[in-house]
Length: 332
Image (cartoon, rainbow, N blue to C red; front, side, top):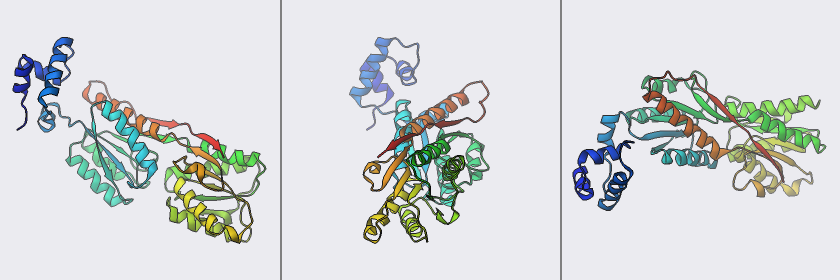
């Protein structure tokens, strides 16, 4: 049977009102009283009834986190950063999978609204964001991470994709490279379009032509990287240097090169975006752009907590903010 506030009060030798004030973090409670009540809560095994509490506070103490897919180390590292900050702030996290489908993403948004979450952090599935407006209509703050969307403005936390891609390409150029292939995901996604932009700017600044026949686009999965590298290596004049716009594309591209190593004596230099757990041991990798994945999650969670506090105060909300976090370069 669940322990009640009355039982906690009796155990601590205080009134139920005092226990309630401790549970609501009333700053007027004496430290020794707070300590006694906190110890009684621990010893009796009392658990806060969040559903009842939310009726009084209009908050549920939960934040939704909506990601394109769960089986992705990048998204889960961002999620860890989100959870670390929110847990410290007293919030729980409900993680939802959009299954890389806009309709499914919209269904998950409906679910989170039904759950009365206090905010939603979203790594968008696509560039389409008009359905995020449901959250604003429900009075739920939103922070997007990694990608921008069309049709909806909100706080956003992004990597400095353009400068990261530019710096990696520039480093290959400085080592004497002059012909470059490119493997990327859909340019409809802002992170991929920005990385391609950084790549193009570097070539332009160093007067190196962009060869359209060795520029390839697919999705952001291993299988796509494999097929796109196969296309590059089947070109009449395959490139000796390739910029690859994310980790999973690079894994697939590397798999193709390893399987076909005997068919070619060419040396391939790869600059890849994303420093993941196995990046350092991928063959052919010369340069890796590291995103601060955990910090992206932490920053998004911090922005969310600020928005929730704004909503409870009398000051008008600030305009949407965009934070760009710096990348770093590693040579192998």
